[in-house]
Image 1: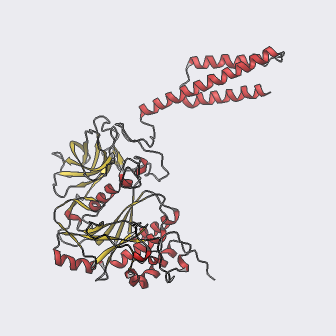
Image 2: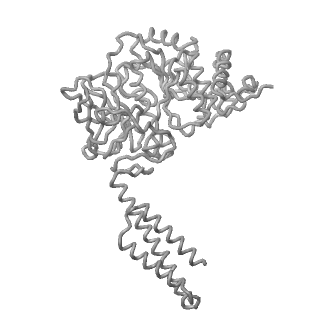
Image 3: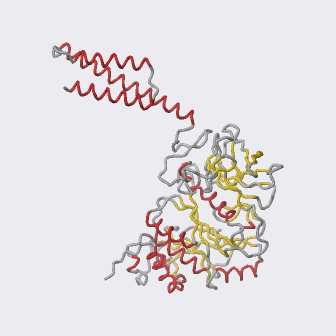
Length: 513
């Protein structure tokens, strides 16, 4: 009976595999038929003899070995078939000179039926891989400094000698030009880096609306077009939709620091921010509820940032400590994109992380602070605000803001952390910036790589950045920390605002008594 069951299972398994691949050869089918016929013979009457039992056992073993070899052959050929038809979904190894294919990801993908431009699909969201090379296109913008070119913010494999070409869509017609690639110097030693591709607008293409990047190796047939932003006439005055936009990059690692997220955004609102742009890779369901609420109010723009679908990213800035192929989930590309995305929508941009708040000490709002600073230093100035770490390992003892409403909300309560580490004297401490985005060509994590005007470091007693995070200096004792509860002066408005957001996001978990 065991032999009969094994015979039936092997038969079903073999023919299922053959049907799945559709590539079994005539020789394999004949060989299999002979082996199954041999097993049937062994199961005839009189097969109970010792000789026949041994023969049957050896035959079954031979069949199993043959099937293993066949399945291995089938898998190898299937991989070869997929690689050569462009259907492979890729893996985490992005090194080398092959083009990038999407990795497996649990993130939502774009609509299966995107609109068409010049007979090809058009994408709205950033990050489009280029066939035939290891380039990811982020977004395209008419270049402010040279209106004859379109600047395409991209992520490139730095050692790849890629031949980038630009395919323009103008009034339903296609035009091509060759791109020049400029790699930003801040890449922190990772094999991938942020780059600008400069595509010259061809003659006869007076009003380009969309652009695709391709390589002769990959061809220009199966491309995805991206809209060319900032191509409309821009305001000549300061009449922008927003005074302040905060660029946050990037949200990743199933982000679940919900309480600090809400507290920080509500602080931004109190300071005068009208738009927060979040480049989101992944987050928890609770975080998504908060983001959905803020998005519904128009305060938050959520930019999909599915970089992990294409590149093996690093979770830090130093390759020796945080292995990967690209710095910190593509943070630099996201920051550069944010500056250009909101260049003509906002008077100022602030490049912050979600655990950072630039807090004025002489004024109540950013508008008041920036008005004073620009009067002192001039309008064409970028302002640097020095970083001060408030370690989350140290809490104040009064319990004043240990609120019942926040008890079950995951994340850091910023109002409990009012002790900051002293910055070292005589060294250049980290900072973040608020700047007129129309002055900026390239940005990095702390400041600018290509900036047309001056930058000024704001004095610590005028304004400073509150960075509520893990301890940075491990050589300090609690007695070395400096008490700084200036954030509490906003608590009267901050606390009810946070509670309202939690309630409207369906995160209010305290049962009514």
